[in-house]
Image (cartoon, rainbow, N blue to C red; front, top):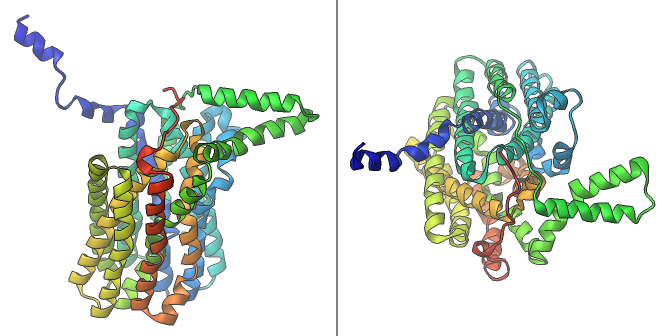
Length: 461
């Protein structure tokens, strides 16, 4: 063999890094991400569009947005998903896949129930099916997030995140633009029935992929040893001792670890996490009812707000990821914290000019590019806060807190829009984003986002 040929074989192909996307578990995350993203709009934006299209009052729509609050309080049962077995399923599928499958079946049943119920005649029953769907969806998020971290080593985590986000966004496109198109040519019942069938994508993937093998980290082993030592000094015996050990390990330790690492600054961090996306969430609850009230057709909303908007969001996410590498997390957190409420003002302008397509395009472009950047930056920040020994519970805490304040305020958005009109409503949505800007500046002094130490991983592929 010549020297040139030997050198060619020794030099990796420029496309070699792309081979990571052929890894079975990386490919599997594309479909698990699709299943995770599908229910989100179906109990959110698409749900509110369905109700408004049938003539449901704005105030009722606003209160029904609380259905999606399950994603904001999922931290309450995340320790159960992390530690408890699903009877029958866990023995066959393993801990993570059992919970994922149970959650996916729950979502499918909930969507089918919504499809077969008339909101005008039985709004309460539709709400119950939506609550079931939302809780199934939130549980699926907890289990899939944990699976994603545990299924591969650190070197493949970037590829796992990329395929997950791609599948997630494709599902949002399907649940947004796809459902609106089906409803425009058929019916809302047909649209929700079709979405229920699509959950088979995730169910099939869960049955095919392998359960990850997990190694307990040194940090976790030491913590468990301290828990055992503590229990040995108590009078607890039998089930009381077992329950106390489980509660300390599953619930107390993840939160104790976070506050130990950040001290009093942890309060400012949690406040920032809770307020960073509040402006976008509050605005998003009423987005589709606003488009319909303004006079846009369901087809125009599907093509511009959903399909074109998705492209703008993904573009913003790519830009945000690149800018984080260039300028760091701290600068980009401040930039996106400022831009998110400012771009909400474009919807006040749209309310003034009326149902002009160019206005909708410009508003969606500004808001979604900024929103995509904010998502990319914020996920990088949340990852830096997490001790990988407690990924499932701590990440559930952050992601729940990220949406909870916005979800609570979102319940009153329909009433507010009726009282003040659309122009002032979006001014209000922009104004509540100011605390996040202030907190981002505070964090520069007490817990600089670029100086956070993240404990090492303890996972094995």
